[in-house]
Amino acid sequence: MDFRLTEAQELVRETARDFVDREIVPHVRAWEEAGEIPRALYDKMAKLGFLGAPVPEAYGGAGMDYVSFMLLVEEISRGSSSVRTTVSVQTSLSETSLLWFGNETQKREWLVPLARGEKLGAWALTEPGAGSDAASLATTAALDGHEWVLNGSKRFISNASIADYVQVYAREPGTSRHEGISLFMVPQGTPGFTVTNVETRTKLGLRASPTADLAFDDCRIPKENLIGSPGDGWAQILKTLNSGRIGIAAGAVGVARAALETSVRYVKERKAFGRPIGDFQLVREMIAQSAVEIDAARFLTLRAAHLRDLGQDNTLEVSMAKLFGAQMAQRVTDWAVQVHGGYGFSGDFDVERYYRDARILGLYEGTNEIQKLVIAERVLGPTTRKP
Ligand SMILES: Cc1cc2nc3c(=O)[nH]c(=O)nc-3n(C[C@H](O)[C@H](O)[C@H](O)COP(=O)(O)OP(=O)(O)OC[C@H]3O[C@@H](n4cnc5c(N)ncnc54)[C@H](O)[C@@H]3O)c2cc1C
Image 1: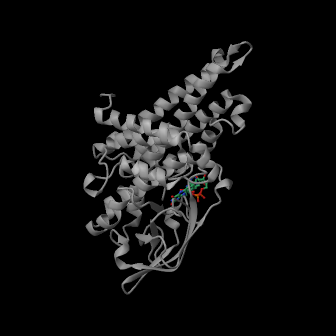
Image 2 (image 1 turned 60 degrees about the horizontal axis):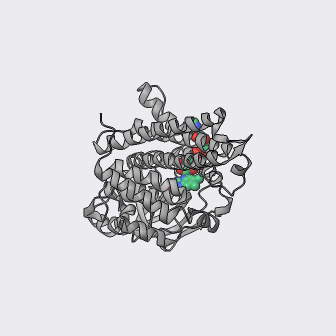
């Protein structure tokens, strides 16, 4: 067992760290206030290959291994969970779906511009009546001659308002549960397709990451916009979410690290009872516990990524990394607020944002409870539980 990173992995981490310190950290407060991230940032990230990190070079990507990709995601998340969300959706969900399930024509037409960062993507599974229970999705896609006709709605879709391409899961009319689900590419601006942004200020966190509700009203797309074979959707969803969840775990490590680094600086400067508060054992305990938990979450994440690089099944390890990471990030950002005292509550200090942003990690791409179900199923083996 070798815990050292390769030179290439170190380089990705250093490049990302430098980029985040220069291009994200100084601006993140203004973006959160404005409720959006300037497109120019994504252009800069695209030049470094960040928007197509795990995609092979043959399809316009950077061809990174998954360990490198997770180191990149951790750094981006250290700067901004909103930016990390956009990058995660672009790479782990949109591009990965096309890479795995798209045909050659679709890869050339959609994957290449996404991986180069010339276009942005969104991935739409959740509906008003189907979140954790994704198999109850009700949006339909009916074949009418040479077109698919989509009807229904989607909820809480990241990037949808800024995306050029939105991937949508819908079912053949008359089918139920895991049967008859397929994936479709709906370009922005298609008649019958409307996107309504959720008001950013009403969200607890991720205030610079656009989240939108989608409506499909007799929305017609070409027959060729089906990605994969009809009815393959359920297997695609499971495989894609497994890919996306590692990124959430790395995101958890990043935001928690930001919280700890901020706290370390603060406890050395802030004085009480004539001493820096970092001298007090109860404060040191929060710092020590944070450091241990962040490292534990990082090891779980990199193990899941390493297994993927080896081509091995990592479903259990991914769910463990995501569950622990999400719980860890909540604890660590909470301690960060605590060591900042009243200033941690004020909004003038970044820890307040870290605390709010950490909350989403145990909700999207499978709640903590869903990860526990996946883990328990693997640990217990076949039981009488019916999905
Ligand atoms: C900011 C944001 C961005 C998002 N981005 C996207 C996106 O880009 N694409 C997309 O498709 N979706 C996206 N989502 C949706 C997200 O994935 C869902 O909100 C999530 O899967 C939970 O679904 P739900 O909200 O319907 O909650 P529900 O499924 O209604 O869950 C409510 C509660 O019940 C629990 N629960 C449900 N079933 C069980 C069970 N069997 N056992 C135990 N507990 C259970 C849940 O864990 C949760 O605590 C986003 C959501 C947010 C908030």
